[in-house]
Image (cartoon, rainbow, N blue to C red):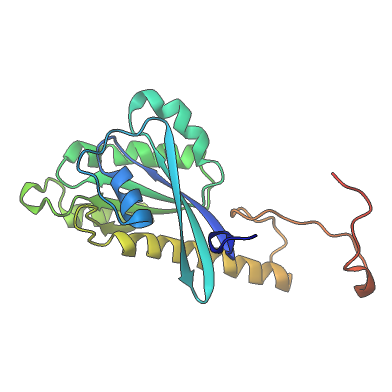
Amino acid sequence: MVSKDDEYDYLFKVVLIGDSGVGKSNLLSRFTRNEFNLESKSTIGVEFATRSIQVDGKTIKAQIWDTAGQERYRAITSAYYRGAVGALLVYDIAKHLTYENVERWLKELRDHADQNIVIMLVGNKSDLRHLRAVPTDEARAFAEKNSLSFIETSALDSTNVEAAFQQILTEIYRIVSQKQIRNEGGDDPSPSHENIRPINIPPTDNSDRNKKPCCQT
């Protein structure tokens, strides 16, 4: 029996990247389970969770991957960029070093991920206003310069967490659906770079459409 969770129109893989301790795991748990853990420990390797949302009447299932931020896991996590159509690049607004390292993470993302990946810069821990070390305008300007969307969030009090994921998933959906429309119209013969598996169907007439293929792989 197919469970409700298995019913979706699109499945998008989104990765969370950034330095250790910026709150990636709590962003994941807040969005997927509405939970926050003050005692959250550093992620070892990779974890992921899923949640489905509605966009334009379509069910979008998000598979959110939380990649470890520690240097010693960098070689492991680079493989997990494969197949990702979105990325949240997270820093801590109260720790300027985590913001300085955004440029390095962005380079790694460009090196390992699909060139069409949708990237959002996320300034997390916005509840720590009294400790702010990264001005909002500075981060927004960096995002604009690098063609990234930008938002500040707080996994602790839920500020903008829902909005961040909704925004990036909606943007991915718009890109994918527009590309499908172009492909169906024959205007864009190039293969899709999004997280869609191409299906090659040999020429046939309408009466043959429901027949099984002649050979199995």
